[in-house]
Image (spheres, rainbow, N blue to C red):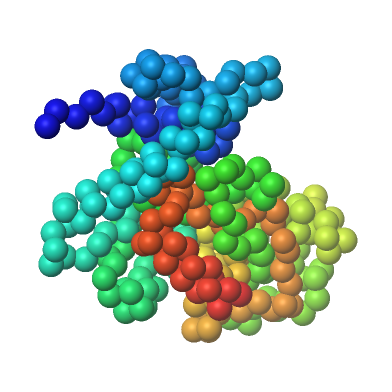
Length: 297
C-alpha cells in the first residue's frame, strides 16, 4: 500500500516549533536556520492542505488542526527514534546512549563512574564524545550533552544538574614548603589561571577582601582536568569545581587548606533535543547523573 507521508524533517520542524511556540527556538534546538524551519513547516502545511500555525505579531500559535496533529507527531518521532536505534543495535546488544561531554567532566569524573551506571542499568551502554560549545543534535546521533553554562542563560534544551562551587586546592607538598594558614598567605603563591575564566581569581580574592592586584598568576590552562594535574604537581594553587576535586582530595593528592570555596555563577547542564527528551534511556541517565553528582559535593 502506497503511503502519502510528509517528509521527516518537516515533521521534526513542526514538532519543535509547536512544542516551543517559536520558530527561532525550534531552529536553535535543531541547529538549523529559522528560514529552514519555516520552509519545512510550509511544506508540511502544503502536504496536509491546511494551516498548522497562526502567524501573529508576537509569535505563532497552533491552529485547531495543529493542536490535533502535535501529540501524534511527537509519539511517532519518539517511537521511530527508539525503534531505529534498537534495530541498529540488534536484539542481543545493549541500547546505546551517546553523550557529548566536556573534557574535564568526562576525564575527571564521568569515565570512572560509567561502570557503576551500567551495573545499575545493564541494558544500557554509554558511549562518550568529547565536546565543547553548542552540541550538534541535528547533524549527529547524540542523545544528550553535558555542558557548563552561565546560570540564567540556559535555553529550553538545558536542565540544571548542579551549580558550580570552586574549591581552593593545593598539593600537600606545596603547603609544606609554603603554608597557607590565613587568607593573606594565598598571595604568596602562584595562582593557576583558567584561560576560559579570566576573572575567576579576582572575584575569589575580592570576596576575601584581598588585593587582586597583588596576585601572582602562574601557568594557564584551558580545562579543569589540566588545572587539577598542575595543582597535584605543586605548580600553584587552583580553583577547582568541588565534584571534580573530590577524588584528588579523597586520595590525599590535593587539600583545601582553609576550607574556602566560591559559587562561580556557572552550572552543569544536561542538554537534550525535545524529540529525545522523553526517551527512557535519557530519563534514566538524567536521574542517575543528578544523584551521583550530589553525592560528590
